[in-house]
Length: 331
Image 1 (cartoon, rainbow, N blue to C red):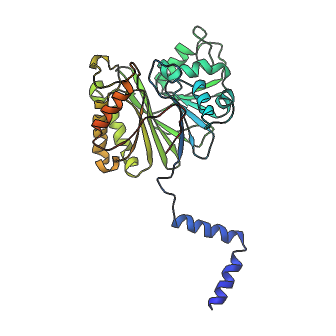
Image 2: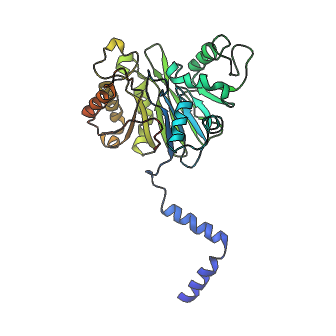
Image 3: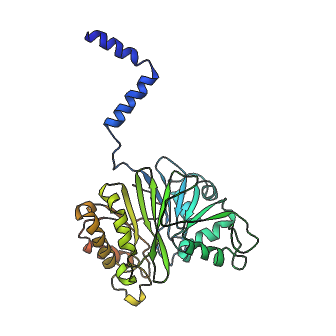
C-alpha cells in the first residue's frame, strides 16, 4: 500500500496543476515574514535648509520595482547623480528622472520641499503631482506661472503646458498612485498655524510607510493633528505592518520657542512619541524605526547636538535612523 501511494504521488508531480497546489500549501504553511523588507528608499536630500544640493526628497519604491514616487522634491538631480555614483541607481540622471520617478507627493509648498521639482521641470516627463488642495493652490498660483517660471501644470495661468497633472488628495480616503503598486492616504499637519503641511501614509499590499512633512508639536500648535495621526496608525505599529516613520527634528532643544516656526526639537519629538506610545503601548515601539529628517545645519555641530539630545531622551528605545543622501534604506 505504501509503495502504491509513493508511485501515485510521483505520478502526480508530473502535472503542473499539482505543483501549483503543493506550492500554495507551502506558502500558507510558511507565510512571509513581517520583517522582510517591502520598501526601498533612496534619500535624494535629507536636510532642512542652507545646502541647496541636499534638501528634503525621498524616492520610494517596492523592493522588486524601479517605479518610484518622490516624497517631496527639494533636491532631485543632484541627489540622483549621487545615487548613481554610489551604485544604487543605474543610468543617467535625466533618464531616471523621466522614466523611474512616476509621481510626486508634496507635503507643503515651502521652497526646500519643491525647489528641485520646479528647477527640473523643463527636463521632466509628464506625471502626477499629488497633494492636498492648499499645497496645489500655491504651486499653480505662485510657482508654475509665467510670471515666475513657466506653467508646466494642467491648471492655472494660461497657457498651460500640461506636463504635470494636479491630483487633489482627500484626507478621508486612500488614493491609487498611478503607474506604481502603491496607494496613499494624506493627513493634515499644522506647520506654524495657520499654515499647513501633510503626512503621507504609503501602502503597498499589507505594508506601510509614514512620512511626515514639516510639523510642529501639538502643544505648540494648539492642535490635535499629531494625536489623531498617532491614533490612526497605532494598530499598524502593533501589527508590525507599519515599517517606519519619517519625522522631522529641525532644531536642538536650545532653540527659542518663538523661533521654532512650526518645527520639532528633540524634546518635542520625544513628547510626541510618548503620546504615540499611549495608543501602541511601550513595547510596540521598542526598536521601531524612526527616521529623523529635516535637520537644519545652521552650525557645524548642530547635527551632532540633535543626535545627542535625541539619544539622551530616547527612553522608549526607538531605533533612531539618520538618513544620508544617496544611501539606500530598506524596510
